[in-house]
Image (cartoon, rainbow, N blue to C red; front, top):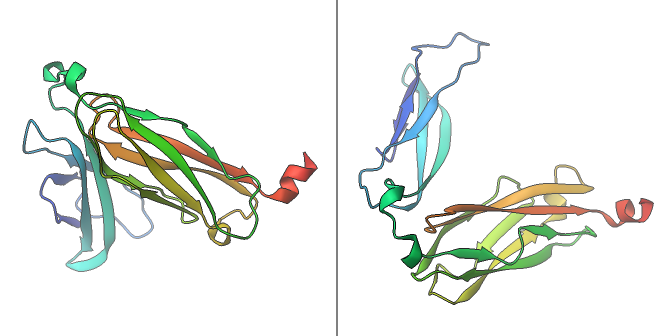
Length: 186
């Protein structure tokens, strides 16, 4: 197997040359920053090939935090505050549901929201601001599409927010909920 990354800062470390049919193996993806001052989110696509033939693509995301935390001036840094770390969509019906979570920069420098994401096809996330000045507020909008739920009755997922906050560069918001039928049975 061979691996080709679009972003050369992502390096695949594999201690095998080939994998027999039906066998499993593992490898690591290492992010090597090229700048001591670099922070934020980085994404890439890594092509997997066997004997020159494409076997698929892996998407890799890195959250780059301070390379030298002892040199970070935390007193003058941005700081993210979430108003809620859990969003409940109960009762889940058949129509899309939207909820929002307030975010605030309680730090002393600009807070950059460098990305948002989820691994759940039924959940979509959108940020309303890319940058929050100190003292400013914004929203993270989370939408649930019940028609895309793997389990049509129960939601237990999460949304991830990537920022340049040196103390919490990545934060998670849990997304939960049950259908109206399940709520009545309790």
